[in-house]
Image 1 (spheres, rainbow, N blue to C red):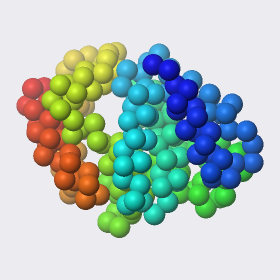
Image 2: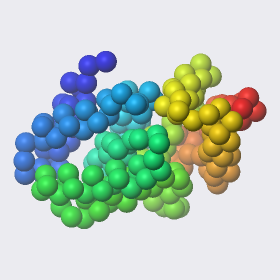
Image 3: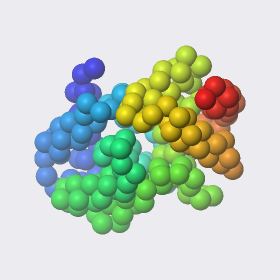
Length: 208
């Protein structure tokens, strides 16, 4: 799928945030990362969906632009065979946004938000974290067929993992999500996605 719309969104976002350099070249580098061959779910389409949900929930965020920046970086480093993807993505965000001339306070907030996607459990009152995590987890609350496509794509990304090991790891992830105090924190996402997400997660867990 073409990504020129995403490149335009990135360029506009960086200009709004006061970038001191031309953001387009780095936007192309980010999209190259998001398009790497090992990805099946964590693709530009996932980025596009997260950004769309951030826009829908932006009124809840304290700093919507920081949340949008975090969305761009939250899976910028993605290697299914490694466990430190979020940490590496956060470090990438710090390097890139600092080089672009963004204020240190906003860069630090983006770093914090990217690291929140390790467990998707923002503290109460963390408005930026709530919006980013809800946007990232919105896929869980889709129609059953859309959720099935998501789950199948995740399995493809972990195709190198033997089936018994994948089932055990995936079950742990599903149980963690179901055990969260709330899957969604913003009122709009909570109302729209919670019931479907819990049904989808429970159905997948039962089928493993």
